[in-house]
Image (cartoon, rainbow, N blue to C red; front, side, top):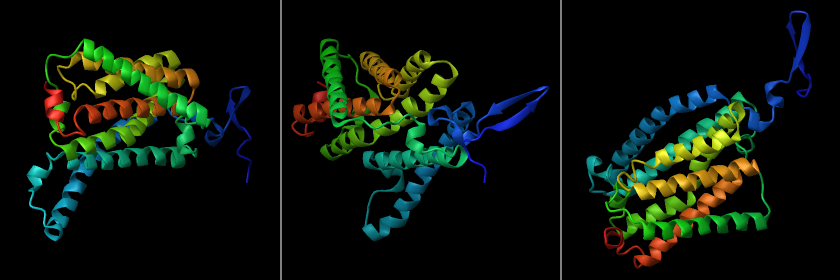
Length: 274
């Protein structure tokens, strides 16, 4: 078998160019526009599959577990929606994993820019994310939004609030960073440059949250700033890990503050609509 590190000759006119095999490329250089198109095309399938599969599981399990909620009502339940979101995330991350391993023959995490950090660096980025959350909270306290926004209606009970908080701290930051500061950033950085990647991924990140914060324009402005900070950390360090840690630290402080300011999520509705 030929060594994968050897270059393959390509004949072109009177000259011979040398091009490394795809598996010899640096992991961060493997992602391209074709991968993005495949990923975008896969998203609708993942959305339908996650919802349909979970509904089928609910209908099958309902008689055995003696659940009384109808299939129509359960689709509005926050726990069901969060589980569905988790299934959706598993599908899209699995798709990216297969692209990295089978299509590009590269390790998944390294291909998206993930690198190890020292314990001191890890703690530093988590702390910085928390500091960013405090700064944003102060700004929003000084410039509060006058209208409610769609995300607020999901905090309708203590159990729902706990589920949202757990999801926001443990799952959402990792998956969102993998997509925005991992896949999208790698493609844009390679094609246009890291500064352009910082701006675009920050804007797209804020755009993702528009449906949740519709009419809450000050919140959206702060999310744009936060997204740009996460993207800047990715661009400056060349590492996906800092943005994940910043995101985890940010969401942790936001949810911790909400937890203690609402008597352990018992009065979230009164707090949000005060």
